[in-house]
Length: 314
Image: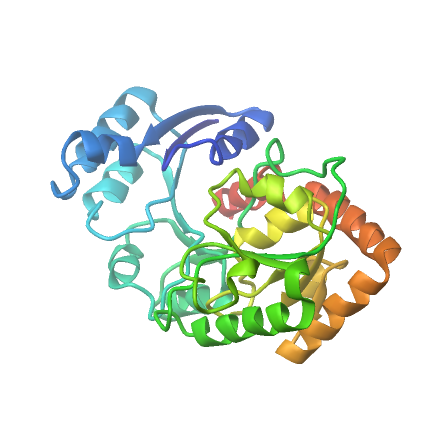
């Protein structure tokens, strides 16, 4: 099978192409961000004819698209792909509230509109269009356990103020961690100066450099800006894949997806769980090793290819 990937191409998305190739498929990648920059980012929809030109020559059976932004494509793209006999998927690993209008507008024209959270799936289905859940994957060549000595507690994520629904709660969580664990706790990301003591701020860390931070951390805590069934940022996968013991805010589905992650429903629960892990480092190391094994077995992009193929067969 031939697979066209109109996605943002960088070190951490190579794994999507490799996953399809590992299943025996021929892959062609279109890095729409690079083409958008080449033509001026304000030249709306310029990538549509370029993708269709590639498709005319390549003749893909499947187009797995990741746009995640408005004003990039119109219905001309999925219609043109389908006219070539191509099965079209518009997948997003992001969450925005409310669901951006462009997803709704284009849902009638894609064979499947796919999300990493169930409420968005159900909203598109309620409109009468096909939508499916597909959890995000990660890059195992970057995120894996190391042999560094581990210690302390880490949170990786930005502080955007009140832009997102759970931003204030996430700030309160980090403040509670800093108060409870002092210099053992570090937060990496933008916007934390003045929110927690300076001693707890590690500054901004880019992907994939965050892997180095995770491999030397004993415990990682996680809390997203949205609490939705099925949804967790890929930061959870990075932390578990790197072998951290993880305390994550609960979401519906976490027990099935991450059986060795400690799920919490209050900041107090999170603090108590972290304290228990720090007090029993042997248990924390054991949970971290089990997280890494489970994540590698269940959550690489290779495990996501099967459901996509089934969508085509249904």
